[in-house]
Length: 225
Image (cartoon, rainbow, N blue to C red):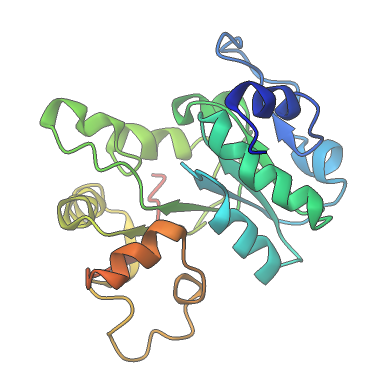
């Protein structure tokens, strides 16, 4: 019998791989800030975030691909997070965690140079102009990321949305960030087969591909000056 949302939320409260401070968590620093490696993962391996991770497919896929790194999926939707957290526990994965917060509060949870990279996989396009600041690649969010990303740490974007892709390119150029790789057709442009983005696909990504839609991809790092 499928679990309902209330059952899932109850289980999230006891899952050891989930941190959910609640909707009314304080804006001051969370107690794990600066010590995720030591107190949560119990190692000193690099920590990578996936924002808007949904059911955690990409977070888990990356963790399986790179067991020498730690991965934290971030999302506010507990019903979705439950799926990834449950699967990670069933597979006894010790390099995966999930954080249930709104991404705008990330700087309260991670300290300077604590994070070694960010994945943004098929984010909500926030197409309306007034919602532009909610895009994970807006100046607002990139300024937040500067608080905890290591120098030259990569930010990866996968999207099926043309406007979001070119908007991000514009933000990168306008702020003198460093564009390292980009393509408007990830799976059909020759020579990209070895990219990490090529080897992992989400449920919705597979649907997009079956419809013949193109997948956009880019990698960049921040100019912190």
